[in-house]
Image (cartoon, rainbow, N blue to C red; front, side):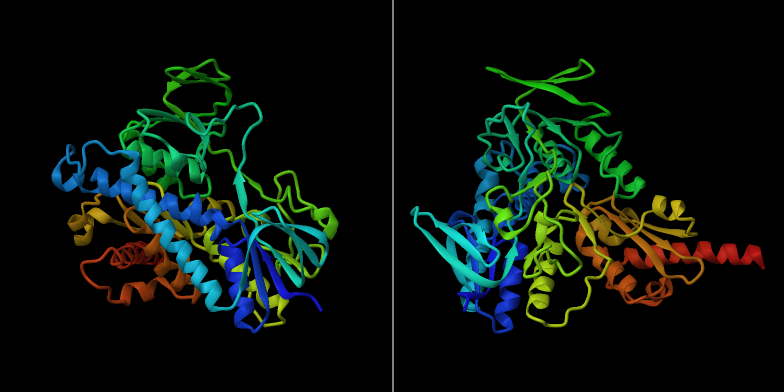
Length: 467
């Protein structure tokens, strides 16, 4: 008889939810992770610290209050790294406690160390002490996550030339910074350091950034970041990064040279599968370290599952949690509904971006007619109260059945607001529901009513002309 019904490798959002779901179904469950990484990358170097850092930046710089109190408004003049990290360390510590408590309350055994396959049902646990022991399980869930990908041509030192994991260990706020890669992580950090007063240059080999987002939203974000003195170098590739006593010099293939105090690479992520000995379980990973799974998150070996960032897109904490739960239910023979394809995307730039459904470009490409309804925060009482005059909400509405095809939000609270649109879309509601609904006043949620009225007024005009 195996030691456990389910063994989970990794305690990040996906692994943790898989373990707890199986434990709630009465199974004997164990989790293996390094003692300093309980909660995974999400808690220690990813989602939680970066979002806490963002909150500290917004608070200490007074950036969001400047529309009200003037451009020179600052909560603290000289912001140090310890000002920023004290809040981060506090939140991370509390979150680790919560996860340890949840695992122990649900009688999940937590083994400190790293695991690798011995055979399809057995894991070799290497403990911190150097001891090795074997653990067997009927089902195994791989939830090892990812690490930042590092180009071989660049010499990282973690202080002046770093990846997104090292940013939290900076000794001081750099006066100038080059960020290589305009993906989600790159743009989140670019906006944070720009808010702190660093002169940021973003280098991206593609022609634009965040191409999954609404074009109008991206234009607004670019405008904001340029206003914070961010320089964009699109269509450019880094040829070399030199480290000098007085800083770094980033040399682009076009011949441009960019001096800066620090360089941060945000060049995608690599699955943490190198040390798992996957071949001993009959598995393999692609060159980015990712494992292929089916719709139930099963690998090629039916009793082994994989969830979270290690399986690739969308690689979000929110989707990883749901994948972990779904995998555990499937392994335990418990019925589980398919994850809804309406997954919201939240990008924690300054200001925030969030969307659900399709963009205008996607609908146009698919020849799907739509009408646009827009609400601007500056027209809302709540927008004036909080001093956000740039935010906006956009609804894409079908003129045929009046359902919502997409919701795009930019500004304060965007990642929270989006769930109203997600719920209406998920329940098959129409724009008329939002027109007739009463929203608390003054709130940002009221933007849904304003945008819905804007869209229905346009639809009414089309109907009148057609009569």
